[in-house]
Length: 175
Image (tube, rainbow, N blue to C red; front, side, top):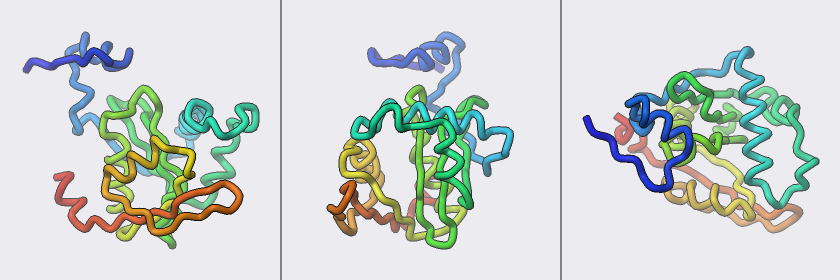
């Protein structure tokens, strides 16, 4: 099978291309309940992604151990691509509320975020909700492209959108 490499390919995509692996294949993405031994890797994804993307926050205010306090008591699902940690989602199960969804920059635009949402639906059901900080335009555009809707705009403190996902066909689309 012949694979095409885009002009804007990441370093990781280039390595997979050279090895003859197709990183774009959704079968390369595996999602499992997070294990304690993965937490160091998840902390790094959480830290690095926030430092790269959260331009509205003070860089030095973002700490490695933020992961622990921000995910305490939540269901955490880890996404791996070819056995490398690519991202995670943490969910308040009772409320079906996605508290965190982060994908490492090396794995963005490969279907990891979509796969994490689909697995969240399988784990806790619909509808899912989340808050998306208004300044996080990339995340907002991603959620809207996946069928999320804006339910409410909150303007106090750090403005955000309360979003909802009710796509009952999501499980059929993944198959």
